[in-house]
Length: 256
Picture 1 (cartoon, one colour):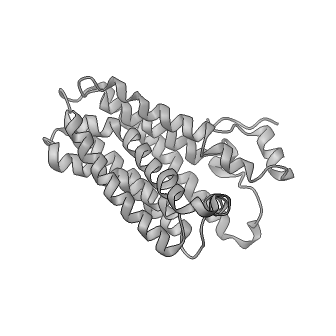
Picture 2 (spheres, helix red, strand yellow):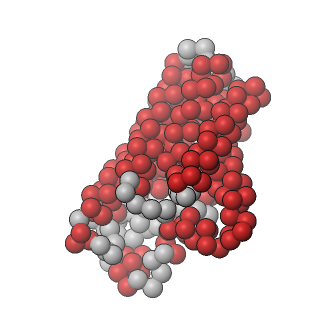
């Protein structure tokens, strides 16, 4: 099982080095956001082409990660188009000073590459060693993934439409899926990886890949997801009111 992971790791490393060089040429480390989803796809297909055996479970996992990763990459591309470096990366550029180049390589691109490898673990395991025939767990996992994909894709789309309207500049999105969760797209991201994990459980010994959805949950709840984004809106009266009545992640009816 180590060889498929080595294949995925090598592909991720080479592509991340390429994106790092492009980011330095363009002076924009937020290119890493575009690379994120696409590298999941590249890693999965590299394993499938080298180690896959054409099992239906492998096909389902490839489909899920490809649809998710390509949509996310395209979304990030259009979200960034015509704009400069994202505020998070600009902040680090200012704070890191003379160590910026090294820290960019290690803390942005290599760290993200490691996260991609960890989160991809159920996909890699399920493709390389798909196990027995499909069962109810595969159907359950696919439906969980589909639900998560809906929340992420629709949440992103609703927010993009909201931000395109000049009248909404500086406003907080509180309608659509955003009425029930402050981060429906993040909820979708977290939920869909639990679906991927359930499908991968058909692979012998793949139980340990639970580190994938757990890692996503931890990052979104405690590190680079909700905390970093909401810090930007601290002391914003509209956001503080929205925060009091709306769940941070799991969609639920607003509190009045």
